[in-house]
Image 1 (spheres, rainbow, N blue to C red):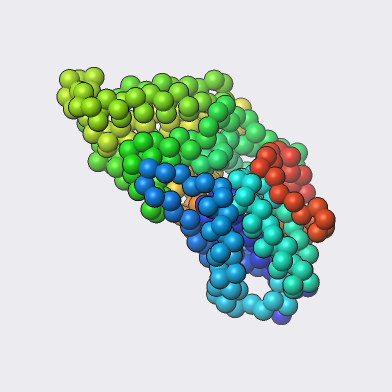
Image 2: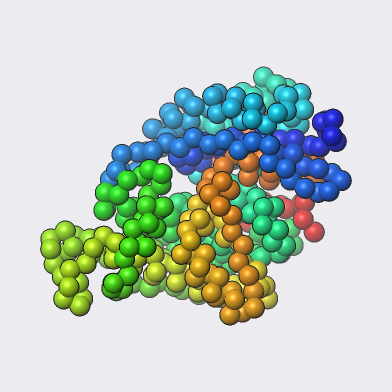
Length: 354
């Protein structure tokens, strides 16, 4: 039921990868405004040179779920009675972490007598991005550790116009960070971005793999790994001079981001849009935003992006998308409150949009 101010309130639980996030949001029916009441996150960080394994990440989420939930509830200033529904990430994502958080969400729903809403992780990113930036009907570039998609809305679906054919761009960057044994704190992609700012003396030749509106990153990663091995062996670059980890990070970023700009521009031309919304963890990258902004400006358009509070996986985006669905009458019965590693963005019926 609405709170004393007439608002609908949802608690959202996210844990599809190494971020455990719980957030509480309110929707004002009079203004249509989405009000962030709390947005708490705890990240599982693995040692340099390693990735995060599902079993270890799931263990982290189980260990921290209660304390993150308590912190989010305390920060929101609302009571349990005022919360209308519990939203959780149904997928896509890593099986172990997804399951841990789904169990936590079910527990809260049963303990507090609330209804459940299963949410598509990708749709959560899109709706949160739209709410924060005010982008009305953009082409969406969704870039993260697990997904790379170019999306546009049509007929109550988020249609995928292009995507990666193998690994996600964030996975490419993360795995290269392992090759260079870069720290995973606060995030490997962020640390690559900072190193890349020190590079630029030379642009190393890497494969450029765009096929229509699709792209491929595995070959680029393989070649970057080869160059890293040459660097460690003391071999010179193409200009006969030594090259550095910063040069490698710069070259990798420039290449993969140019590919993303190309496929996004192609989608913009196809649907006749002049807005781009960048969502997902890689969307925090300032160089990607700069390159995308230059392209959009040439087309007389604009780029929208959020900061790390909303770009990186978080519970508030799940609460927001879940509450949008809840307000249309959507519910996830307890016996159907499963999770899945594969859940396509275009499988979701977007009933809350015209």
